[in-house]
Length: 173
View 1 (cartoon, rainbow, N blue to C red):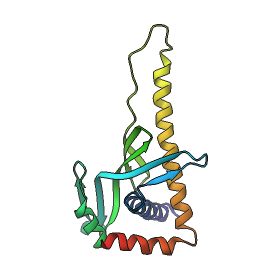
View 2 (cartoon, helix red, strand yellow):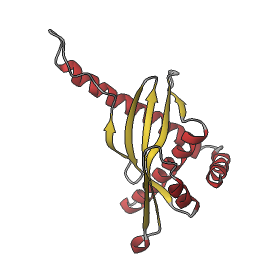
View 3 (cartoon, helix red, strand yellow):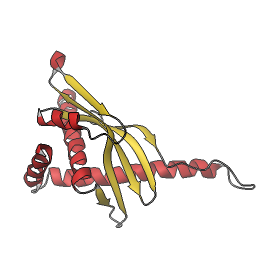
């Protein structure tokens, strides 16, 4: 497989993932579970970029705003555009992370972790705060890995046609 073809396949898979994630976040409250049974949710919110066309005819629409309904982005999907970037919120119990996911190269941009208390008590290990921050970063990545694995199981499994039929009905509403 040449590099250009690999990039095209990666972009298409990334766009399908972000579209499916948006669908899952609205139709099933974005609820997921780790293999250990830990429940968490992932929701698409505040910012979605859709893109369509190729070369000089490529069009991008960015819809954003606090708790936006993202109607224009959904209209773009109905008209053949694909989700290019999406801001998601990952939540578990009372803590949450926010991150912008990029379909083109699967990067995480602007990852915001739950706030870590920086005030130290006397005798406390100064590395503790850094280690806690690293733990929170890794936890978010673990949750996103679970969601992506779920998508891949669906995408390359026998239920994908059924899932896309549900997705089309979601888009039409």
